[in-house]
Image 1 (cartoon, rainbow, N blue to C red):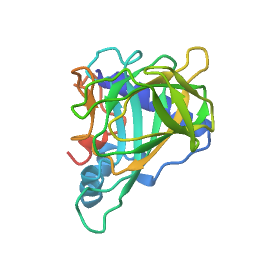
Image 2: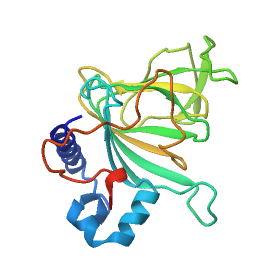
Image 3: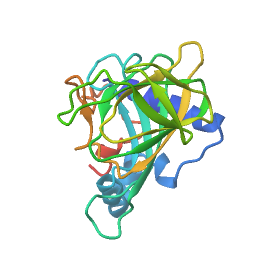
Image 4: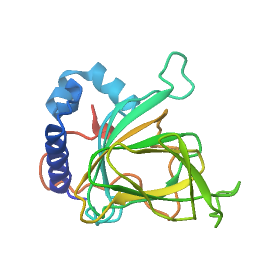
Length: 223
């Protein structure tokens, strides 16, 4: 993914925040120079995987297969006194797919905060992680919803779904509905070890540096 493409995605996400009148912590607006001037904060943010994340999942087709995220709060597993929960903002474009994946440790709520409709598809797995054809039941705003395997669940603004550990899921913005501003509230998030994709893909983008970064991504902060 080109750095210029990442920068443009960050600009669009910033405009979404402005449109829906959401503000980030101070460090959400930091440049590389700001991180360099605040090394202790930079180490904390990176250790907790806090901040911006832009990925095409190694696809080379960000508009079709990609995601922009901002992690607001998070803990570290196994350390006393750390948060046991995480919160993220997700910026999903029309038809832009986050590929099928599951989590072994993290249960999460995905919330359509504003914008268009978010479409999510699910499939259950066996103990080895193999996809099953069984129906699945997911809580939508706390109420059980039965779905066939891969049956699309459409979340309108204000609606949410709880995704239990081990459940495969993929999501995208419904075509014709516009971009979707999404929230995620979950157990502690670890993007280095708790993403299991159905197909062999990369969680993080390989970046071609064709211009200077607008803002460092979380795994570049202080680095």
